Image (tube, rainbow, N blue to C red; front, side, top):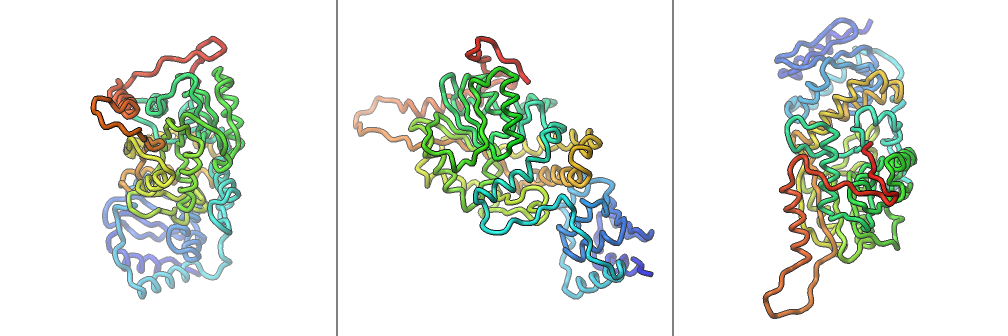
Length: 448
């Protein structure tokens, strides 16, 4: 009969520093050498998954299927990027694999979880590729996301301006920050790329009287966004469409917002993405790109677990690559702001809220998907805590050109107007909000 005794001995020999405890289905265990979380391999299938796909993917599959359990997910995530197993030679790896194979015995390769998406074949970030991968992430169900998002259903980094601020207030502050940077006011037409459930479009219309076209690749998102706009009385100002950003051509907008979208574009498409924005932006218009960026000079492509379970096709560009794309499209930048510590706090709120509704989450999405999301929200938080993931807001527009004028005495009014608005944003009190805009129906819209 197969036994894990030899496997335990080999693990102890290979990993002399172990800030974790391992327990196996037959009662054996590998003790921790210092305090840390416990991992329970509930069946031979858990080890078989690691043998089939060594590393992150195999461990992830075992966890998603429930064959691998942990007593403290937060403590586990706390090890990532902070603990290293050290150098493991080829001979050590072979001995470890042989001991694992003896522990599980002869068996058919274990199945992959139903929640796993096989990597799409062909070229990345075509329209069909993006449609499939975006829907894999967002079409879990609107009700599932509502379990952990704030009431406005804003699925992006919030702005925490004072201790104890609620997630609802912090998301409202972020939306208001973007509106102020863009200088939105009644009569301005805005394109919101990757509009999600319509939180920014609704805020811009309700608080500033702007007319907004929001686009998304997710039909469930679009359906709920339309419903929410009608509920707060701004459906005359907000239009939501299921549409790829590359299909928005030949139209003109006074402002463009793109919130949490750049991560889905792909390095090979960033230049086209910026060119599309430049092509629809009025000469004196502004664009605000709010998105995750990578802390190193190269583009970061998600690891195998993320590619198959969370963000298939996700590519995080460095700030420099985003700036180059906008410059190649003939635009210049007016302001850059890094908010990555705010994203860590946002993710803490989301993870805590999801944990409060686990039974309902499993009913809506199934146990496998819930395990994926519990792990993902914590891993994403860890990426921001370690400073690997950043969050930049970039404000830009077409290049500001002037006519030839040798005499001094004038003031660069367009630049000053942008600067005054940014100073007003920086000096606003934490609870300051814009005056409520009355919709054309003549009544103040209520908050959702």
